[in-house]
Image 1 (cartoon, rainbow, N blue to C red):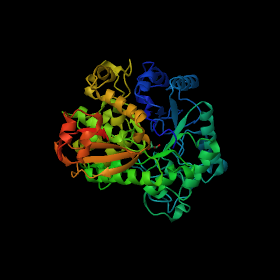
Image 2 (image 1 turned 90 degrees about the vertical axis):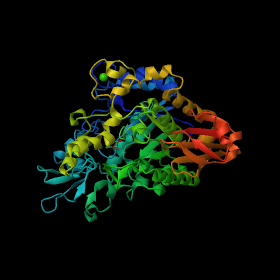
Image 3 (image 1 turned 120 degrees about the vertical axis):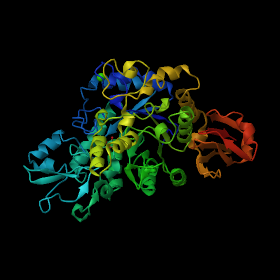
Image 4 (image 1 turned 45 degrees about the horizontal axis):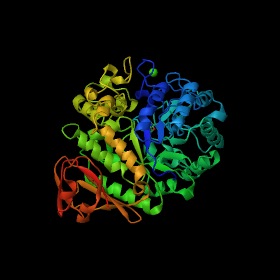
Amino acid sequence: MENKNSVVYQIYVKSFCDSNGDGIGDLNGIRSKLPYIKSLGVDYIWVTPFYPSPMFDNGYDVADYCAVNPMFGTMADCEAMIAEADALGMGFMFDMVFNHTSWNHEWFKKALTGDPEYMDYYIFRDGVNGGPPLDWTASFGTPAWEYVPALDKWYLHLFDKSQPDLNWENPKVREALKNVIRFWKGKGVKGFRFDVLNLISKPARLEDCGPGSGTSYCKDGHRIHEFIREMVTETGIENMITVGEMASTTLENCVKYSHPESRELAMCFNFHHLKVDYKNGDKWALMEPDLARLRQLFQEWQETMSQRGGWCAVFWCNHDQPRVVSRFGDEGAYWKQSAKMLGTFIHLLRGTPYIYQGEELGMTNAHYTSIEQYNDVESVNYYKILLERGVSEADALEVLRQRSRDNARTPMQWSAKPGVGFTDGKPWLESPDNYQSINVEAEEQDPDSILNYYRKLAKLRKDYPVIADGGIRFLDAGNGKVFAYERSLGGQRLTVVCNFSGDAETVALDSDLSAGRVLISNGGENLLDRLASSRLTLNPFEAFAILT
Ligand code: GLC
Ligand code: CA
């Protein structure tokens, strides 16, 4: 990975900024906010899909990979957006949804007419005993096979039925997708994010698979490394910033996906750390976060990737995850401290940090009280499934309040104005009431705001090479709720200490730290004096980084 000191900002286009008052974010809205993004110290902007789409999954169901959905703007707007970011020294990463298309894609439409050439772009099978070929479930809670009566065949969809999976075994499919990359590269795009990439290589003999979750049979499939390498090397994006979204992957595979010698990707997203509050692995069953597990996962992934030459994307938030301050922090008295602590922890790790729009403000979950307020296909499906399982309406709503993807998708809070400064019209999704105080305008005025703290974190990465280039080792602070790690480069050491608890916690740390320099701290007073004693009491959610 080149440019290890880069910082990436993620935009969910539908919710970022609306330029024409229709209540939906758009490309011209993004253009108007490029100076703001630049002010954060960001190098790359990943923007979620804005291509033509029936929007069953908000654009992750792509009907045409090389065009712009009129709802979001025009190709001319897109070109201007790329050029304007370039002039500010930032590059765009576009989102490539290559595991599946929309059922509105022309390839799928042709497949549905029975054209054998296009049927082979997808995964069609005969049924078994009048039912689907396999008893698989899709990620959004439905069966994974859909019957097409006119063809008397079933097609595979690991997500919504409007998202048929592509057949990567077909070289024509691979070539067509490479052309998409070439197209956007030609437009000046500087990098790519690949949606659920480790699901593209399906089992060699599907008919031998058992029942269960479809994705669990398809993750990190037998031809995955070959497919990725071919796609990357043949489109000349090997030295660009690329990131693969890797569902339920292994550390072993992520080393390989991101190791320069593999010629695959610059880095991967993995999600193990965002399942530590899933009861028995079930996203729809609530549990307090298991902090010991969280720490152990970070230690294992960070240290192994470092020792073995892999590279991670490091992040808490994206458009599929609840807001981190609501999840591992505190929305109440320690809102500011906890948001800063969580930012400190992620930004000083080894890897490329991703900031999801609004994370830099400490935006919270949506706080919806009625199912009508939700939009997301997964949330709407699971609400029904929970009720069918016998969960009460109140409990099902509580699960959604904590787990729904709409928590991340409420409009970016620009100001306290109606429409949260996001739109002059009616926003497509409701905001939590706290936009009155949690917004860009308010946080710009406050030197001590979460927003200004995130700016400091991004700058530290540029100023201190130990953050981008150093090795990493987790430390035992003698307290399971306090996560500490040490970055090192040459003779320099950066010690990062984060209290994940809402209580004061006592730790034992190396007392040499009191002779160091505080690079950043979220407010604990007299830190160096306190460090001089062998046992240090940390404030709730306290975080700091010390250079020695
Ligand atoms: C990824 C996207 C998510 C989408 C899914 C199917 O997980 O991040 O938003 O629903 O893939 O494309
Ligand atoms: Ca709009």
